[in-house]
Image (cartoon, rainbow, N blue to C red; front, side, top):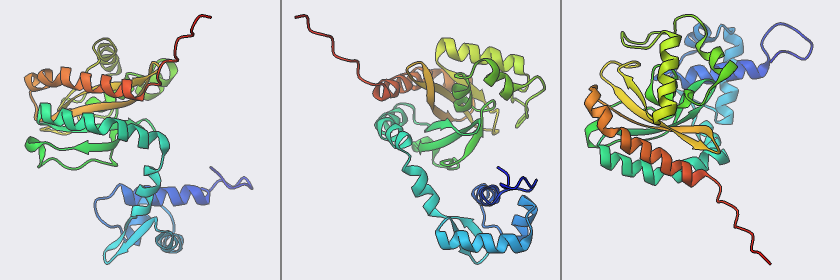
Length: 259
């Protein structure tokens, strides 16, 4: 967005968003100096903006700086589609944790990233970091690949491009042609895998949730590396995604009764 008058600088909405995104992306409160470095905005502008956002409940102020406010979580949680997805999926996610013993998460697309909207931890996954609200790369995570399997044509080309993708670890798939082969396999089998491709020591298996032929979310089980553990849990993850897909799908219209 730009100013209505056509100036080249960012609009007020742009500046507010970049401040909120910077605070949300940090595990620690950010000072004005930190925000200047991250946003490139003048300190005086940030001072006025941050205190106004605190007043509105979008940010909170602590002794060591500004952090994201809880009001944003409340507003995001009111999205009707997201509320329905989480409500329909939750009992099945708990059942998946019981069957696999691994951490389980639910993700949707957000600006070509996998946004984690729900997560549940089993006995074997208590030490894993919490990811609700986190946005993960599509090409380097199982849940991201499951979501990416719904892309096709120009949309997929725009995400993958023709050059190497960002490597997060030494096992990240960075060649677009290899990733396309994996996505073809996800579409055939309903299972996506990630072998320590985003974080060393963590692997995952995921499956897309589809409604009317469109990928709307993805379910994943995340645990320690090892192909055997992933393969053993693939069927359970696929089953959970299928059950959630059915729960979200509209009921078929009743058959017409002949006169």
